[in-house]
Amino acid sequence: MNDLHTPPPAPQPKSKSNSKKVYRRKGFWIFVAGLVVVGAVANATDEDPGLGNEAAPQPTVTVTKTSPAAPAEEDAPARETTPEAAPTAEETSEEPASEPAVVPDVVGMNHRDAMGLLHERGFMVNEEDASPEGRMIILNSGWKVCRQDPAPGATDVLRVAIYSVKHDESC
Image (cartoon, rainbow, N blue to C red; front, top):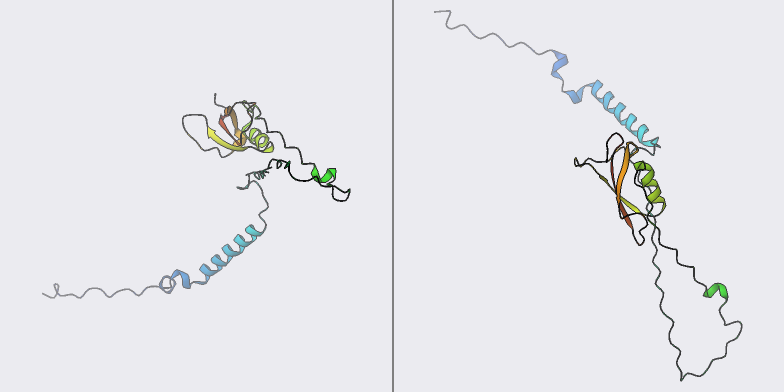
């Protein structure tokens, strides 16, 4: 009958090294401090323009509205103008309006070069995968342009869409 009533074994005391919580250990805080220092140094010295800063600055568009000259009243008496009151040629001349940019032909070009040319000419660019897979174009130097919209030679356009595939693929 003694065999049936034996007490369970006494619980083993936990070792000291495992009883501390992680955030109370000195090594944990040294690791955290090291991460903070590395992050701060990396942030302070990040001068690589290729890490997400590839977007070219967008051109500024300025719209100038000119109003037609007011018609001269026939009943108004003629006014005398003095040389001091007459506007000079510099004051009256307006800057000639810049001609609208013509969309260049970028089909067959490297995707990155096409983007640079279009941005240089003042266009905003939409880029799409020409394959049915619908991939995102991340490393654009490994792609070639298959088609564009609008066609080359178009004017009065602000945005150009280019459709590209990887270099080793056919359009």
